[in-house]
Length: 216
Image (cartoon, rainbow, N blue to C red; front, top):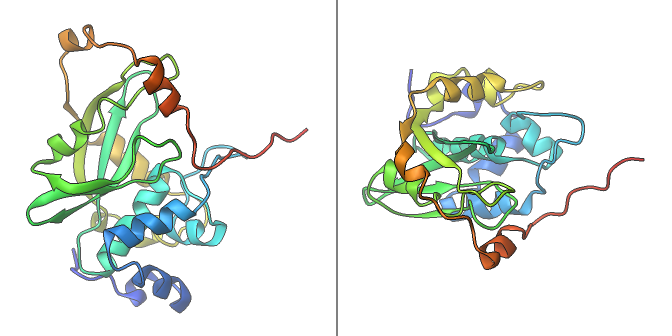
């Protein structure tokens, strides 16, 4: 059942965990909370940490941060919604989305400066997804964003799989992959795309958190 408010008892969170999330009462506060976390560089292999594990390990990457943001919104009575952005020859990206005054915004956990928070000024989810298009590029400086899917309501997934799971939450990632993705550009348009220029490359190379040193 899609409950409007997420109760602590339904989520099986501790009082301290729930209180931490409940203090994140606005999208701005949620974004600041995620920005303060170091990036999850996955030094021991790929992860998809639950909200509990993100709080415990104090690190996150995009889907992990998006799930935490979505839960914080749900605790405040907003639906926990994810938007999946799919790229070609590049990593995908996941954000939590919310509405204000009938317009969409996004909360995003990312280390580079470009694929970040979006203010709630976008009339449609496609318009919001397209706002990431120009900056979404790979190491070859090619613009790679191709499609989007959502919103995906996390209330359709058992909280034990993404809120308190102490192993991994790959089930959420698999469900996002299985959604019908809508194209942002045509194949013909993709052939006309310009590579990022030197200034854009320099901006894209910035990082908020430094990766850990490699073990000897």
